[in-house]
Structures are given as C-alpha cells and as structure tokens.
Length: 222
Image (tube, rainbow, N blue to C red; front, side, top):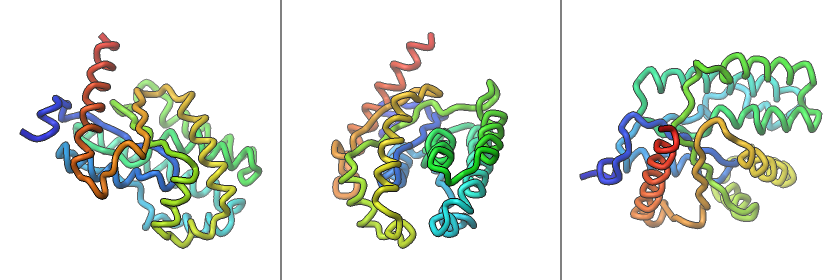
C-alpha cells in the first residue's frame, strides 16, 4: 500500500505549494509527487524570457514579467484540471497578484496604468466561478534568516545580486498575504518541522497532516 492509499487521499486532488523564494517549494513538490504518485507542475524559470532582465531592471520589466507569469500559470491550471487532477503544483497563481504585482506597484516599479491592466486581466481570468481552484494550498513558512540561508545555499546568480532588503520586503508581504488568503483551504507547514532532503521518511507526517486537513475541509463543505 502506498502513502496515498494509506492516508486515503483522493487521486484527483490538486495541491498547490506556496511560499516565498527559497522556502523549498520545489523540494516539497517533488517529495509529495513521489510519495503520492502524483504529477508535478513547475513554474518555468529556465525558459522565462523576462526573469534575468527583470532582476537587472525592476522598473522596465516588472509588468512584462507578471503578464508572462499570469498567462503561463493560467494555461497550466487549465491543463491540470482538464487532465483530471492528481497534481502537486509549485507556486500558486494567487501569489502573482497578491504579492509580486502589488509590491511593484506600491514600491513604484510598476506604473498605475500597468498595475490596473494587470489586475483587470487577473480578475477576468481567475476570479470567476469558472476558474478551478486547488483542493489545498500548502503554505511553507520559515524565519527570514532561514530563507536567506537557503537562497545563499542554492546560489542562483540573479538572486545573489538582489539586495537583502528585497527579500525582507517579500518575506513580510508573504506573511500578510497568507493571513488574508481565502480562495481555497490553506495548510501551513513550518520548514523546520521536516527535513525531506536528509530524511525521506519525514514526508509521511506531512502527508498525514494533509490527509486530516482534506478530510476536515470536505466535512465542512457538506
């Protein structure tokens, strides 16, 4: 019996992993997909034509980057649900508007016109009764020091060149965002409560929590 059957997790579930840069979303996505025999859905970092440009010049490329992410995530969300579920998704579509676009507008690196255009597109595409929301959003949380350590360890050049103040700002905004998020059920996991990289068996308690949480949310819907 595999872990999905052991903990009675529906095979058509769609679980999204959210959290700030460096918190371990990709690692959790891979671990859960292997343990549950689910497919994965990752954001396209390596093929993103705007990401490097964006880190060099926030003012010039923030709008282009957010529009690209919105289009790609919407297409991916549609593909997941057309396939019938059974996916672990790395990063949610909600973070784009609730954190990144909003941050750039408020900090002056995205114009008011661009921000209004972006939010209008987001609302037309996502905030409708027809958009399929995930069954569960898992929010990975940790201290700022833990996040900065992980960013340094993975060593992506464009992230190493980014001022620490940017990561501080993002960390705070993520906490504010998740405290007000209600588009789908949320399970919060502290990154210090498991160690998937060095102890593969630590994923089972996470799956047990997911199972209990999904069952509770289903009961509330009845």
